[in-house]
Amino acid sequence: MNDELFAELLASVRESGAILRGEKDPSRQFVIEEVNMATTLVIDDHLIEEARIIGKHSSATDVVVEALREYIQYRKQLQILTLFGTIDYDDTYNYKEQRQRL
Image (cartoon, rainbow, N blue to C red; front, side, top):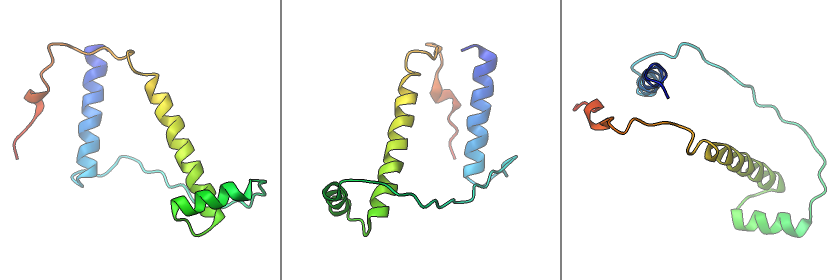
């Protein structure tokens, strides 16, 4: 990663920290309305019931929604793993210099 891109990334991380701490307003926001879609699925009743009990869910719908969330999270983690070994780091960079005492 070249110095210019790294500086841009670092500035972005600092800005996001300021936004999370409420020190700065975000430059843009996206609002996604929740969409509920009725879907018919054929799933083994025993599988759903076991997952409902283990996950302490109150309904089959809750089981399916949780399973989809976990599946999406898992797939995103797999995508992140492909980045390992592709980012160049500066061996002389001292991250402690960037810390500020409050």
